[in-house]
Image 1: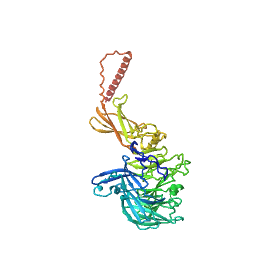
Image 2 (image 1 turned 180 degrees about the horizontal axis):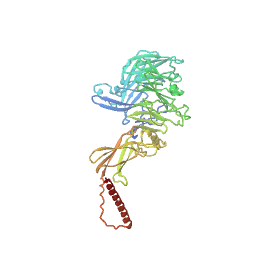
Image 3 (image 1 turned 90 degrees about the vertical axis):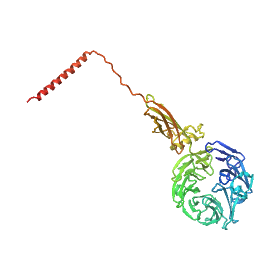
Image 4 (image 1 turned 45 degrees about the vertical axis):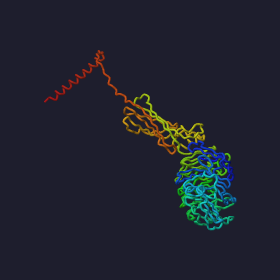
Length: 583
């Protein structure tokens, strides 16, 4: 993970130099360059040519009319690109912005649309490095081969485009769909300005379509300048969208034709919060438009119909905020079928609002997967891990699956020579240092159900969830005849420990195996131990020796009584037989 040490002073003032690189898995410092300007973008470029094959990682920074390229693994400056072209921006002419689009191999593509001059150009970082293009240069990629390079040599194409009224400015670069959308406005100072959207090919520069938008309000261009695509826009999956704040509705457009396909319902009818007036942050993924803002809700709409699919709400903030919920300014981060929703504010108050959380939400159903107290300033997902900076404690956090460790031992049950106790632990082996002042490695592994509260306890000084449970453990054994059997399943407790009773059946050496199969929070782990068992010998009957004992008076009386009874019974039987013989 690579980050700027000193954050920007404001939206228009960059921070001081200084960049750090840390291991994403452990947080350990890899390198630090205190003279590197703030990072503008990063690049992983893959080359498959005659002399080289593989991927390289780079960092890019910009200063005035010079762009710098660094080795991402060491922080070493490799080369610089001089005399960057001048482009007309919102505040007048300036050096072209290093706002890249990434090509299919990770090449950095920078587009320059000059509608007033009727041309459209594309700069390619790979061509800039390989210039002059030759058979030798086409087979390798070596930025460090020259300390300085002319920026203009990286221009791949520059084409003439038809004139369009209003000189539209580039607004959306959708490389997967191959379209750039530019926009101009007319009648800007009226109640109903007209917006002209134009689509251009990002592969060859040709104009694809022109569409006028009317009766859609001022958009989110700001209090003085109308603009549908200045702030409140979203794109992806073949569509783009803009927010009409006067009606609180999102309009969805097919990006390859420019035709409107759907309009979502007014957001306040979905969120029940009129602060949806500022729900202008949107993203499109998985055929869905996701919107967020000051309502404290994430809304999902089908991009082909505009129908509401689901709404996730943070709930009522009471008097903690003036918005009825917890507002967000920066939108959502989407990866691996999950919406990461980190609420934040445009201008956070001091002290910060209490009750903010980072949420992980199922992108299909809107169901909350987990949450943790956080005011997120920025976040990103890489290698299956979410990383970002939390404003509550000024710490950088990485979220993902942690390593686990399992142990197992056996011991006899006291007072029994046949029954054993199997015992062991399942622990979290993640490398973080907790707020308790102890390493996370060695703390109990906890079930997914209680993971949010457990992590808040370990890292954010929140109350310990005393009812938390551990993780399931499957116990098996291999008997002396090399047969494998399942003993059963148990669950570790809040201390990470588990126990289970076991009765062997035959004598010999046993292998006892404990397995934690993993969860959404931990990778699996296993452990085994061996034991010797001897079946107890069968009990031998006790022999009795012959003895002579004199009878007591009571014994004699008992024997006499029994004898008399026996004689009476015998006489009765003889009498009965005689009666039966009578004719």
